[in-house]
Image 1 (cartoon, helix red, strand yellow):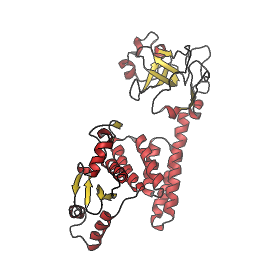
Image 2 (tube, helix red, strand yellow):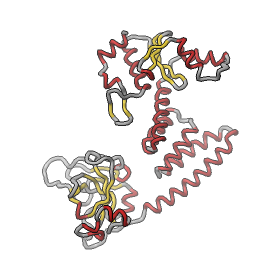
Image 3 (cartoon, helix red, strand yellow):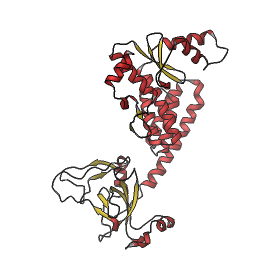
Image 4 (cartoon, helix red, strand yellow):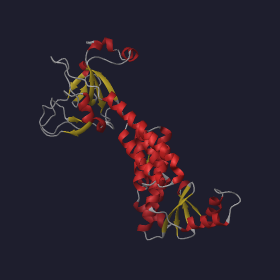
Length: 351
């Protein structure tokens, strides 16, 4: 009751519900049980209560002393030690041995370390992002897990695989080398060492092919045929969304079906005008990239005095650009505030 009083008085209900993966914000009625357990623990300790967090098989509890346990998976239901011993025992073989009983009692009498809580939360996120095939988010969570437990060889192998799926071959090769060194210390895993070596060779070949394809150069034609440059901030003439140019073609290179669906031939200059690859500001559209005809592009007006235009908010800005120029400085052209990274400079050397 004392904890509930503290929670009611000092914790806003919507914050106490935890972080919603679905919406990316704090929501009433949505939360992660492990996050809730951390809130219970933090508030309880500040209230002077003997709070422990317990990591049980397929479950997570908060304990007050030795006899009161809160089940955060069931809305904060209070459970006794006998209930938990029975429930946890059911997760094991029915013919439970004495050492398993002792293990259960050890779990209920212990307190999980903070790093173990983070690893367990990360494991849940890994499962979620894997099932959703959100590989960029998956890679970030795996990086966190490896930082906390760097000798987790199985996680290293998965991390390398996901990195290669995202064309981050240097990271994949480096990670495989770490996994290989770990397995070399154990003779029982000699076959895994050879597997790591084989995958490293494959990733090195994939990296070479990727860079060869990515480094196809596009030189600007003379005579002003191409009006805009990589890194320029633009606004779409028709739909009024903001964006930044990260590539271009001298004419529309999309397939016939896309050209027909988008009515490209109905434009004033049709398919033979330059087309630009644009990262769209997430405040205008949700994480999109578009292929825009030159006649539909307006460069951001910087004639007004004051601060430069807002930076574009998009998850892939860092894939193509290494800096954003502020003040009165631009890269080459008007509103060209994003500086291309090394790979983009190789692809568009004249921009």
